[in-house]
Image 1 (tube, rainbow, N blue to C red):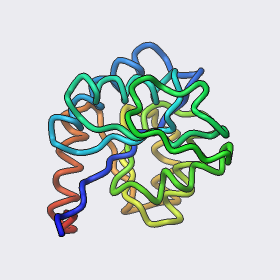
Image 2: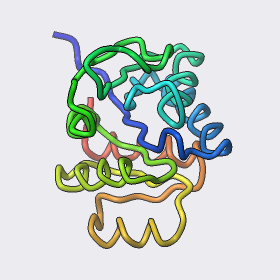
Image 3: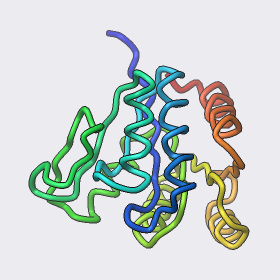
Image 4: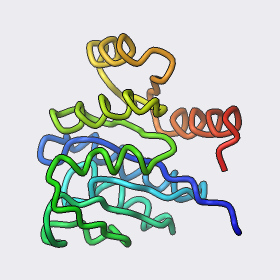
Amino acid sequence: MSPSKVIIGVLGPGENATPDENIMAFDLGKAIAKQGWITLTGGRSFGIMDAALKGATEGGGLTIGILPGENEKGSSDHAQIKIVTSMGSGRNYISVLSCHVMVVLGMAAGTASEVALALKSKKKIILLNQDEITIRFFKNIGSYNVLVSKDVPETIQHIKEYMAMNKVV
C-alpha cells in the first residue's frame, strides 16, 4: 500500500477576501502544489477558496473542494475533486478532519468557526498574514497548535518542519 498524500487546508473568507489576500492565496496554492501536497478548500468559486485552488491547479497540483450545497453549483472550476455535502457550514468539520495542516488567510465568521473546530481537533494551524488581535485570540485558545507566518515561503517552511517533527507521511 502506498503512503497517503499530504493534504493542506487553506481556509479563508469568500466574499470578504481582499484582493491582496486572494493573490497570497493563489501563491500559497501554487507553493503547496510545488511540494507535491494536495490543496483542500471550501471549494466555492470566489475568495480564498477559488484563488488557492487556482494557484494549486496552475502549479500542477491536485485540489479538493468540500462544498456546502447539495450539488456542484457555485463551485470553483479549479476544484478537481468536488465533495458535495449538503451540510452548509457543517462541512467545515469535514475540511478540518481531512487535513494534516490548515493555513488560515483572511478572517470571517465561517473561517473563525473552522479555526475553532481545528483547535478542538488538535490540528496544527498556521495563521498567515493575520492581524495582532486575531493572532492573540487564537494563540490564547490554541497555544502550541497555532503558528504565525508573514508570507508564503515561511508558511511552507512551517509545514515542512511540522511534517518532519511529526513524521507525517
